[in-house]
Amino acid sequence: MGVLIVAGTVTLALLLVQRVGGAASSGRWEVALGQPEGTRITGLAASEGGIGLLLARPDGERVVVVDPKRGRVIGEIRPGH
Image 1: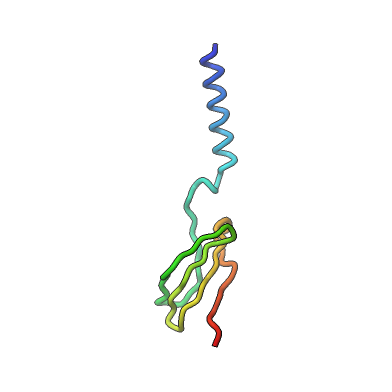
Image 2: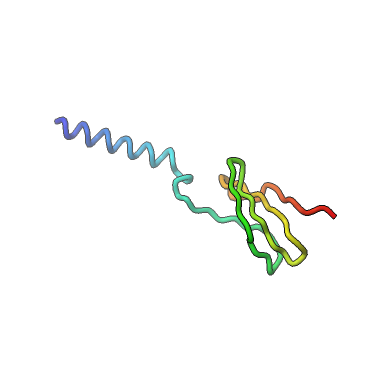
């Protein structure tokens, strides 16, 4: 009887972790940056608010900030002239 209680508790805990973790536990996402042909990612920095990608474009460098939870570009930093 004790074994069944332990097994049921472990199963319940695993199901809760899977459902709460859901999409975040997959560890994979894709995002379209919408950059011109020939653009390369030359740097990467992560923070709580987003992931910064340093891009080398044919017309110059810029930083694009991506929201990792939604997989969308949320900002862009261009050098001033």
